[in-house]
Every structure is written in structure tokens, then in C-alpha cells.
Length: 470
Image (cartoon, rainbow, N blue to C red; front, side, top):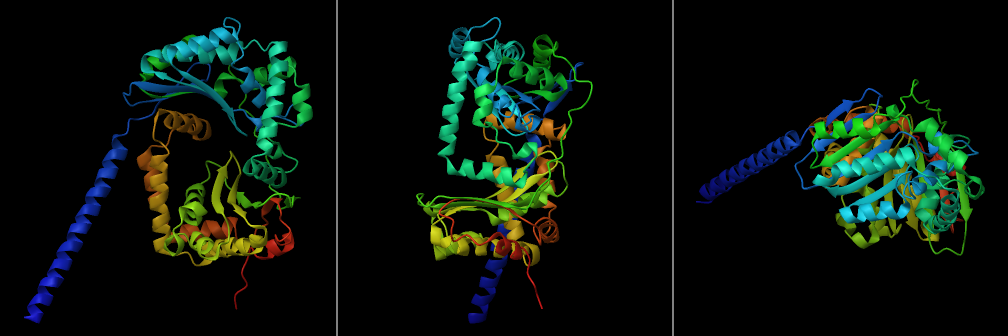
């Protein structure tokens, strides 16, 4: 009887395993179908070199925007801050629209107009109903071609930007990352802040803004991207009518090589309650083949916040150690990419006395990535990366942003099923190889703000970037 029961139990286990495998297969098959059925991104290049890219999901709303291949990296020491200044001036009126007219027109459409500047790109975009896409395109085209740049508006916006700089200084994460770029890329355009120094903001005038537009706002450096309820052929016609007159650039934009320097900057301030620390090695650019394995390695280190809890049940080794030993309040790994370089590292916030222990655990985890990372960990990181990738594309605005950025970076939009295959193709060996290439025995860049007396000396940090094994 016992043998019969045992036999039935084993058969049931085999059956349950079979059902689980079928469920997993169906789930994988459903994901594959979903990824393949996502609307294709259509791309058209106009005669003047401007690219039009869109994804039509048939939604009742749409996001449309202009992605310009110019940011603070395109500036020099004298005009650093001009790209961000231009972003502020964009909505202050054009040759045919006053600021009030522009605001009323957008408000009457029920639309949302916005802009932002990064180190390599400037973006102007609008969220609106599908039927209002033609008007949104016309407004965006008017903004980048015919901004008035009046002296009174420049003076008023100068004080707004100076106030914004004070607000940024109170955001310690922003401050740390600015310091990290300043030390990692010292003496190069990537080391400059996006907002620029105070002396530049006080001196930037109409001629500086006009020169920047004439130099960088060329058709071949601009992408008109759209997502949601938008017909590509109609968008191309709108682009020809509104942006067809933009001057084409004869030469491709020069990318000034930005040298990475292993170094540190510490801003000790014992009046702050917590230490804010970032440590990074030089990563790779957008188009480098090592980018996907580095993204998997970055996901493997993960992110954690004390409010999450989890304790011993956290999948990430570093999160588990942080929770159990009270090492930090939060940490966040990052993989920041630029055209030809990048920063791969971690940012954490901790109590002053925990700086050394937290950094020790971070570097131990990095060395483990180089030597002992397991297949199960890599599989988990790959699944998490794919999930995050899909979650980040929830809505017309993030999809439009993804289209604009990828067209500028890759000159095409990588389909999601291709991206999934590239992530699936990453093996344990790939992760170890890129970790050895970019992390092992490399000089890191370190930026620390707050009560950082207990943060180890740079030479000690550098000596922990390799393991000596007998």
C-alpha cells in the first residue's frame, strides 16, 4: 500500500512538473507574441536630413516631440549652460505667438507642453489628443525655429535659472552626480554641469543663444518622434510643411572624446545627517556590444531602500547585507551611457559610521561579479531587466522618448523582441568577462558629500578593486 501511495505521489509530482512546464511555455509564448505584435516603428528621412519616427498604437492620445542631438556636451567653458537656458526660453514667445498666446493655445487644446536638457540631448515635446497632433507639431516647429529671445524675457529667465540652481543644490543626489561627472571627466565637456556655472548664467545673452541655435539646431541632428494615435504618413507631411525649411548640416556633428580619470572629490559637511556617496568605473557607450551584459550586471547589483524591507529574503546579495547589517538607508546601481563612454557604478546613502562597511560590501560584490557570479543570479537579473524594460514603456510619453533617444543613438529603434533576444543571449561568462574588463583592477571615480570622514582613503578604495588569490 505504501509503495502504491508513493508511486501515485511520484506520478502526481511528474504531472505537476509537466503542468508547470506547460504554463511556463505558454507564458513565454504569450510574451513572444506580445513583443512581436507591438506596432513597428516607422522611420522616414526628409530631404534636409531630419528624421521622422513614429509608432501608431491607435490610442486616443499621442505624444509628439523634437529630439535634438545637442546638450551640455556641445558647449564649452564660456557658454556652458546655454542649452538649458534655451530650453527655458522656448516657451517665452515666438515671432507669431506671444507667451500668453502660446500658453492659451496649449491650454485650450488641453495639451501638455514640456522640455528638458541632458548632457547630450535637448528635448521639446507635447502630449495631446490624437486629433491635435498637427497643431502640436506646428507649435513645436515654431518654438525651435522662431523663438523671440527678447532681452526682457532673457533677464527674467536668468533669475528663474539662478533660483533653480539653488533648488538643485538642496538635492544631494543631483549634487553628488554632478561632482561624479566633474571628477570622472575633468577637463572635458562631460565634466560640465547641465545648468552651467553662476557666472555664465549671469552673462549669457541673445547672441550666445542665437549662435548655439545656428550651430547645433540642424535638420540632420533633429528627430521628430511620435507615439500613440498618430499616422506616420500624416506626420511626415506635417514635418515637410513645418520643418522642411530647416538647414541641413553638411558635416556630421563632432564628438569630442571625453577622457575618464580615476579620481575623487569629497565635500565634507558634518552638519548633514547622512553621507551621500557615488563610486563608478568607466562603462561603455550606447552602441558598444558590451552594453547589454553591463546592463545585466547592473541589474544584478540592483537597488534597495530601507522602506522596502525584505531582510534575509532579498534576492540581491548587497540588498540582503544592507538590510541585515543596517549598512545603509538606500542604494542604487546605475549604468549611465553616452555616445562613446559611460559611468557604471553605485550611489548610496548611509550613516556616517557605516561608510567604510558599506563600501567594503559594494566592492566585495563587484569582485564577486568578476569571479564567482552564478547562473541562477544571471537568469534572475535577465528576467528582471526584461520586466523593467517593458514597465518603463507604459504610456505614449515613455515610448516616444524611447523612439527619439534610440534614433539619435542607434539611427534606428531596436524592436523589443530583438532586445529580449539580446538579453537572453547573455551568459554567466559574458557577465564575468565584462566585469573583468570594466571593473577588475580599474581606477574608479568617487564623489562623496556630507559627513564622509569614515570613507576610506582613495588608495584603499583603489586597492580593493582586485583580489589576490593564492
